[in-house]
Image (cartoon, rainbow, N blue to C red; front, top):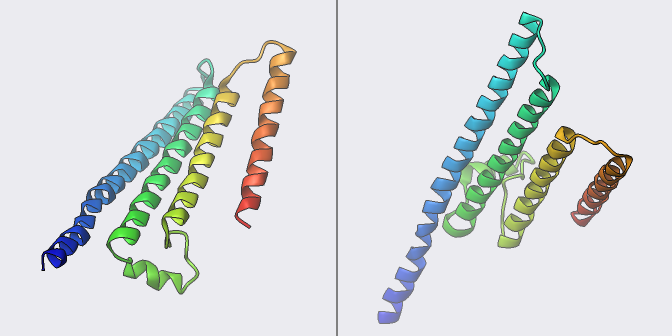
Length: 170
């Protein structure tokens, strides 16, 4: 009997995962909101700049930086969503609505193992790093030919890495 009580308690303890699920979802909402406000601020800057016919210094860098930064936040928000959905499905219960959508070939949030969750999250994290890299490359200033060569080599390395990452999934 003691074994049964202990096992029931141990099995019930999995519901502590609800904290990670709820706060992961809240984190995703916050990231989506911040990214949306960044896009809104960038849009205001563009509208004000063109309506006033004056271009502030580094205008294009500000616009590109604002948009790429927002994409970065959106991607991290997607990581948080995948994390929350995956933890819920792995430890608590299948999401019935998601199962109904699977019949319509929508399997992006379908997670059946910890390895599958890890793979989906790691691919999005790699995309976050790539976007962040291109934001830094786009905003950097290059003064010497050797710096341009390093930039070209680093972009080539990222492209080759993405190529091989796409081959791993197939």
